[in-house]
Image (cartoon, rainbow, N blue to C red; front, side, top):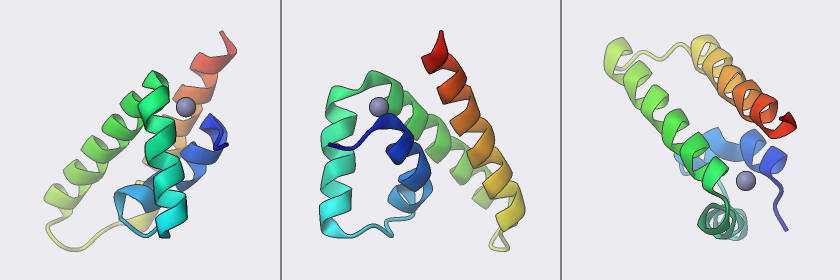
Length: 81
Ligand SMILES: [Zn+2]
């Protein structure tokens, strides 16, 4: 069973469609059951789209990674409460 922290780790690969079929299925199963991760993926996708739109083709992987980390941190901080 995929845990929330596992999902956070592979979320950007999921959005970029870089996961294998099995992993992708695990993510989808988890998203069906987990509201937190659904909003996590939604936020991550929104920020990824935003960055892509703004950088018009040339991506800044460092910026993308920093935003990924911030979203992951926000999610884990929320889990602790
Ligand atoms: Zn989850």
